Image (cartoon, rainbow, N blue to C red; front, side, top):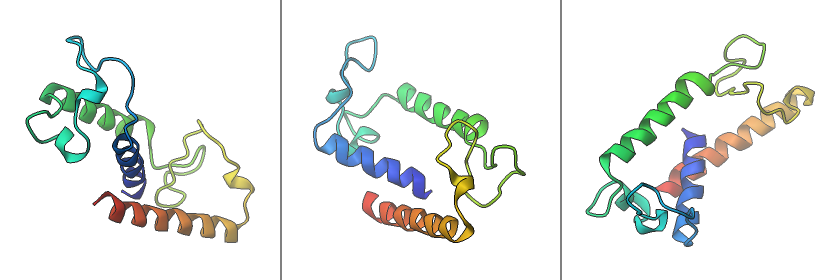
Length: 120
C-alpha cells in the first residue's frame, strides 16, 4: 500500500500544481485538465464518468494479476514481502550486502508510511 500511496501523493501534488496530460481524455473532446483534482475527480458533479473509472480499475487489476507479481526474478515467489522484481528493471539489488538491503527496505517502508499520511 505504501508504493500506491507514493504514486497517489505524487499525482496529487502534480495535478494540484496544474500539470495535466495534454490532449483529450475521450472521443467527445473532454480534456484531461477539465476534470477536478483529488477526490472530486471520482465523486461529484464533474467526476470522471463511471465507464472511465471502471477502465482504470480493470487496468490496475490486470497489473496486479499479470505484471506485478510478488516474486523475485528466477527466485521463489516472495524472496521477501513486497519483492516485485519481475525482470523488467534491475537496479543492482543482488549486488548489495544484507545490511544495505535491510536499510533500503526500511527506507522504502518509511517513505510509504509518510505517503500514506500525506495522501490524507
